[in-house]
Length: 85
Image (cartoon, rainbow, N blue to C red; front, side, top):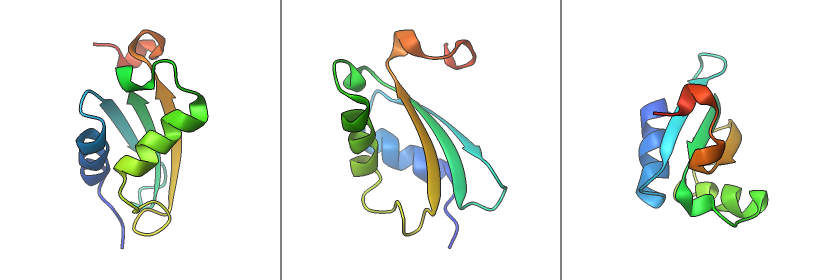
């Protein structure tokens, strides 16, 4: 069953409360997303550790309810211009 972008954002924000999350549905099918997650929680962590934080926040839904997600994680100062407040 497809997963709504708003549900993905809510899960990530529940695990990483300060996160800014930008979701794009890559195929319009609710199964293939790209996510940009911006958080201070990533500071000083390796890319792998950053992604592990996001996957933990997803509570096991990756590979199940959510088929695929291209994930980009950054700290606020490294966020792309379009994602800055």
